[in-house]
Amino acid sequence: MGADGGHYALDSFYYRGFNNQSKLKEGVLNAKYELNDVWTLRAGVAYHKFTQGGRDLFYDDNVNGTRSKMRGKSVADITSVFSNEFGSWLVGDYEKTFAKYNEYHRFGPNKDGTGGALQDIENVYETSEKTVSEYVQADWDSQLMGKRFRGNIGLRGYQTDTHGAGWIQGDSYAYLGTTDVKGSYSGVLPALNTVVELTPEIQVRFAATQNLNRPSLGSMAAKGSAFQSDSGDITASRGNPNLKPFKDTTLDIAAEYYFGQDGMLSASVFHKSIKNFIGSQTLENIPFSQTGVPYTTIPGATANSIVKEFDMPINVAGTKDLTGVELAAQGQFSFLPAPFDKLGAVVNYTYVDADEALTGISNTSYNATLYYETDQWGLRGSMSHRNKWFSGHSDNPMSASTRGFQGSTYVDASAFYNVSSALQVTLNAINLTNQKDTQFWGQNEYLYNQTQSGTTYMVGLRYKF
Image (cartoon, rainbow, N blue to C red; front, side, top):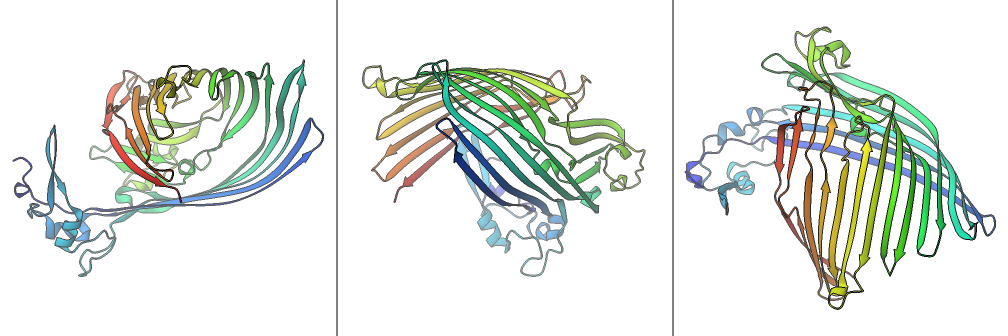
């Protein structure tokens, strides 16, 4: 039939609303005292409270009244045709459709009173995180065996209270109750950073630090759901308000060589020991009573009903290790004859050997950027690569709990032109090679999903007043 609107009929409108909000309150007080030419003392206190919440509104055509007045009507006067080298497609014109059928994006009855009530509300939650932290730090700038030796050493304390509340929902997203959980944690984090300047161009850095990595408020949201398929299989999931932050103890040593105006070569080795790493737990074929989701979410279910698949973020038990090497270089090719002296490059390479439980990590990644810039215009091309990485693991060869993404390489480009000292025109092209994101499951890496977004072009103007 081709891209002829006269051959196609309209169906209806499904209205969706995804409401998310966040609020941040914070205050910081710092003090500094120069003890002498070598030592400087610092101290401070900070208050931080972050609140996040959300709800999803669903208003489908079976209740909003659009099915009866739209379904089966011709789309000839409310569509346009989009064509490229692959073919032609009809594109709906929402403005024309709304005008023709007296519609608008709504979550209640239409202007003429038709449409009925809102269908359902889903994923309702609110979480908050309140932290008071204090620190003391001593900076020094001195000599070590005739070489400049500088750095700092300090301690940071923290006290955090968390609160999560959310709806538990069942079939047809029926509201079955609210989960409300409070939690708290506290601790002290030491840090040491040192730099030895062997020469003005060569520096050696060493750092020994402990860092706190807090869970996202979304993963702590006290909300959950359970569903039953037509075949009778039950799946369930929920957030975990009891998640604790994971703490890493990091050792890092690096050597850096600086040359020219902005040239740099560096090599570093780092090691992290991570406790309470946050991962995703997928349990299969377990009793409903072990999920923490009320079994009443499924009509007829009992505490002993089997849930085929249950997902929840957890703190991974034990201490997990990660060791890596990073190489980096950047510089302007000013030693080349004109006009090539305006060329420059930035490259980096990272290799990581990590415990299998540490998901989301590629063992190899690298980035490279080549640029040419003058005072009036410039061009830049970038490549970013990461190897295969996993988002979950299971000992069962056929379990979908083993999942991840194949390696990918993205190529981007950008350009600018200064029309005047105040006006600049920019052009950005993202994913020039139309790289696909390929997701797999199982230890044999069966294809699960593939996303192809195409290339995005953006033109911008910037004016300085």
